[in-house]
Image (cartoon, rainbow, N blue to C red; front, side):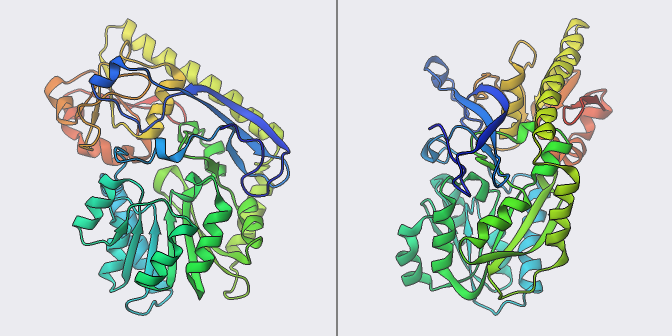
Length: 409
């Protein structure tokens, strides 16, 4: 569905600044049988709202095509991810001195890593997760979960079964939601008076400054920044009262949101607004410069890979995140360049990458086969990946980190 108006302020004053061509859905890994079937590619373009500043996709794919029973992203796969979400849950309980048995609802709760941290602090927890496979992993871990998309139709079921919530969290999920008005209205109905919404999402400033264009894919409908978030929350009687920077996913902001006049607004909020103004992230010139840099990056990366192939080197990719499939599809990197991809996530192993149809094997194949170069697609976890594959490096293997500038390690 083509998006003609802003998701937050409803303005139709939209301008396109980036076109990543047509792309397959980044998390729709294929079985061998599906290789003989047709595969759908969708436009991957990004617009900016001239009125409020929100950057967002120009085309919205129905969520049920992406977040289904085969959705493969598991937030517990990496050590960094597990540690981040565990610390997040514990820190929130300690900072706000939450009473025992307070209800915490996590939207897009995945396999339950964050809620397990809240549970360890004696909180009552509930996950809302549309992917049955991931929700059932959480349920097996003792995390109550509703297998459904978060919406107002769930309010009665939640209130009757669990009561009102002290905190609603959404880590890397708020930016996935098309109807944000419904999210805020539903949250308002479910929260106690001094309750909070706590959201994490990659930050537009980091995306622009570090050329993180592979973060752009169909699941990520919005590319959040502080100015439009502050304005949007006010529409529903809420306000952003604090913001924290997190290292995960190449630079993430954690937004603390409460009802108006219930909490002291920290200096961090105005500091980030000033930072965005200073860096001119909403200017047409800044966004078009980013687009030009993306095109140049594609050329530079392909030159490097083609030269290595010309020199007779064997190249594979290591890790198969959704962002990696944006890179592969946009740069047209397929099995002519990469022999295969390796992964730790069993939900992706023995499948094929969407669009480019590169086979996915377990990480063990890297040592067994010892190719010359391994392109790290999950560059945001590069340190952990290199450490996990230190023997490959000792044996002479080299890593390629593609973002922001392609470099060989």
